[in-house]
Length: 287
Image (cartoon, rainbow, N blue to C red; front, side, top):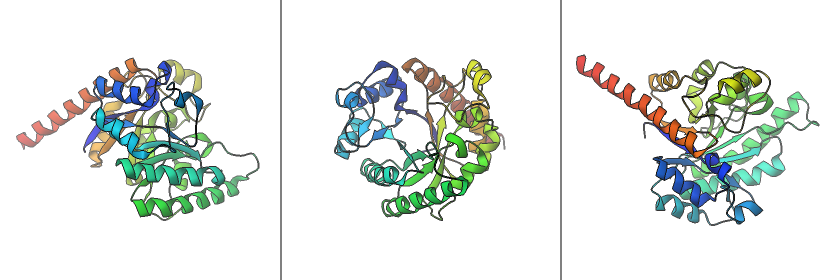
């Protein structure tokens, strides 16, 4: 694919709906790419159909059947496991990689997790390197990327993100850039995006409202969801220009909080993508 808008499944959490219903609604809005969330074991709300996360104890082809039913594909899996807790993250991320391979999702997105108080500064990186080295053995066998997202105390800063995303020399260790988390963490999201382009495989298209920006910028290391793309502080035309100039292709996985915001985000991003494609075609014709 070229650059296309996709949708993180968090958009349906506000309505207490199942994974199946969330995928149906995403398709109805007009998305052709979604980013499912997965969890380990059994979780009461998901089992009752009140939460969109999908258990990795289920048959992976059950997820594929749901995606196929609504004519959507997975741009990646949201499998956020704490890299500094290998007893949790190693088995869970290995499961997520196998599930991703079964459904045709190219990337598993994760982050560092909350730092345990008993790890000092250097130990954090030693433990994350161990986790990633173990997990990437499986990722390389299956041909699935493991993408680190800017979130929490280290990776929100571009320098920290790049350090974690290069802890292991593997072609499958990459970056899932989250514009909103980087902005709230005090980074310039456009310069941060440029800095990680060589490792970029997935983007969380997260916009931040002016109110949240005023209240939280520089005080937090991320946020679960943002506002509708185009209604916040992120310049999406600038983001897409950076990606296109680099020849990047992939999904802009919208992270917003409601179906209404999901619809507005799709309209905004599609308008920018269409306008830029038209301009490119016109320039090529003129030359």
